[in-house]
Length: 117
Image (cartoon, rainbow, N blue to C red; front, side, top):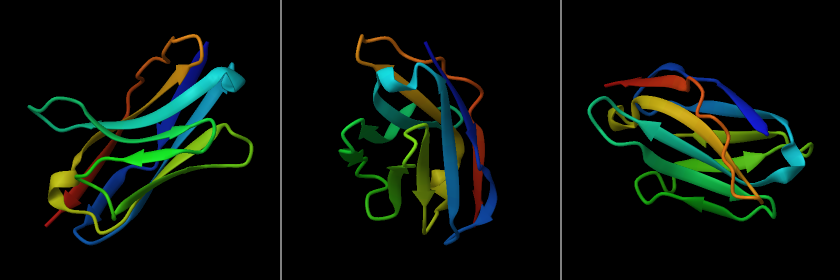
């Protein structure tokens, strides 16, 4: 199984930047895809970005050009670099991993990102 822990959220002014970290533990070599999601109050959880074990990335249109996803060389931490933040980016951000066998990590508590105008 894979467990994840996220960190890096906080309060930032519009136009600012934050970097979120998703640290995986357990069977990290079974991870096929790592994804960042976010959920704002009263809204559905939204897929923000994904990165595969092969390094292929995908970014949601709503954040394309402002957010990037990457991972460290040890393959156990995935980052979400968020630039030019907007108030509508405010949400709880979650990380989730899917393994090659099709199982998923738990969602965990996520990290709050608040962007003030």
